[in-house]
Length: 114
Image (cartoon, rainbow, N blue to C red):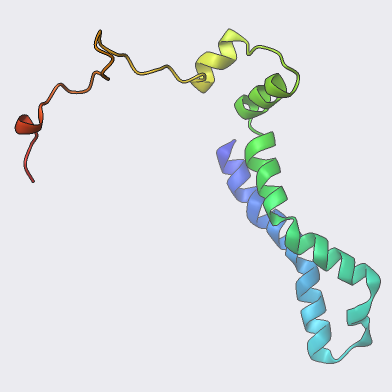
């Protein structure tokens, strides 16, 4: 699935940016069609929608993220199978009885020197 997305992204970007290239070539040729309303609108949409295309491809087309977004928007709890695949919610760090986070247990004197 990731390979398919990585192939589609350049194709989508080419389709979105082709209109600015057409307008650039028309400008070089001195054509009055540069100011055609359709080309201006397609140029504006194509140049600004690249982030939207990334969002759609990598956020909305990813099942785990889509499930979490729907659960958050609809105020539904996540299903256990989705939680285990996503690793969400993150588990809190274990703490000792004093409230300190349990790390490797080194004191400042025992830290490896660099």
